[in-house]
Amino acid sequence: MNVAYRKLYALIQSYPSIDREQILPELRCLDGHLEHLQTWWNNDDLPKNIASASDRVNLTLKETKNKENIRAKIKHPLSGQSQLQSEDLGVLDISAIAPEILAETDPEKVFWWFWRFIPETQIQKQQQAFLIPAHPVLPDCSIYSYSSTVSALVGAMARNETDAEHPYLISFTFSPVQEFIKASRKFLDFWAGSYLLHYLGARLCWEIAQQYGPDAVITPSLWSQEIIDALLQEKYSDFSKFFEKYTGDSP
Image 1 (tube, rainbow, N blue to C red):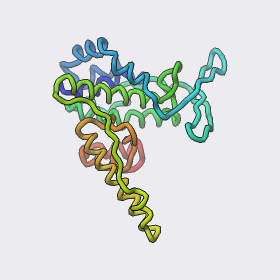
Image 2 (cartoon, rainbow, N blue to C red):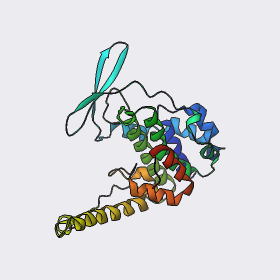
Image 3 (cartoon, rainbow, N blue to C red):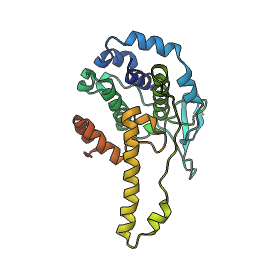
Image 4 (cartoon, helix red, strand yellow):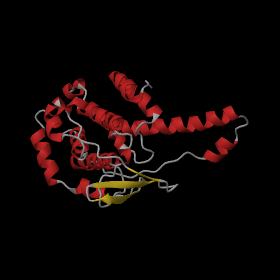
């Protein structure tokens, strides 16, 4: 089975605020695969367990105001500034999914849509959507960060089952960055040099994302990155209307 099917299924199944029972059967790209995917998901807990134990950067603390209203007190990992989250997100039903995505037969394209735009649908409902922790016991990351980590792990492990490839953790950097930027003589030179490094880094991340999925890049996150969004629109031109709907502009 194409790894895109499992990545899509894992992303949706690990996102608690999605009405999975309603949406999954309506995704045409999963026709004929749902039974196998459900069996696999129920019998393979390793990606979920690893994702639950991973360290992330969105640190949160849990605070109980009273028995009827339990809310998370969220603190910024650097400044320490805190705020209480709003009420629960509620459940995203099938009305939140674009009809053309439900009818799409390419699982990779559907995965890209869910990865990029499902958070936007929740942000429209609640501005603090990205701050709601995935688990109240160890609230160290957001719902979206957790589900994206699960799908990334599924992608690495699924490839290992069918291919000769093995998952690796790669770190790369440009050098010398400081010397390159320091050579700027004008503010415009400084901006251009910084942007050039940013653009080259984004292009490298894009090549990885096209082969392994955008969730495979751990840091920097590719979600809502302008250059990545522009390249995504080149890849799927019909995504332009979704950018206009959810972000108010077209990359």
